Image (cartoon, rainbow, N blue to C red; front, side):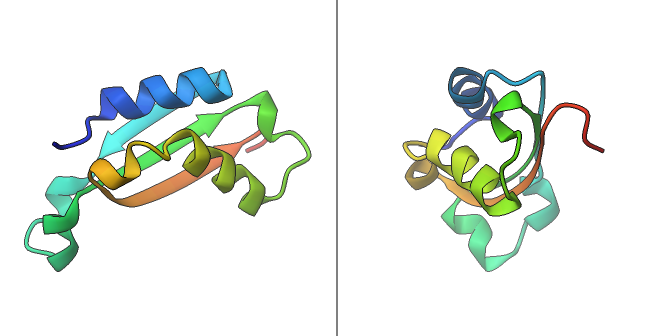
Length: 88
């Protein structure tokens, strides 16, 4: 079963209560790539107060934790931009 951007959005909204969230399915950009058979490629831009005072690594861990049940279902690659409110 393939993972949808709607499922990713729901999981991130529940876990992070973001101020803003955008998910892009980039799978079409990777057609023919060996990893494309293993799952889909997504980009995530998320702004959440939960990222305040956290390192980039800790922010990414929060995102991966929120998606832990979806990743084995077909997320091959995930590009993450995680910011705290007010950051550029």
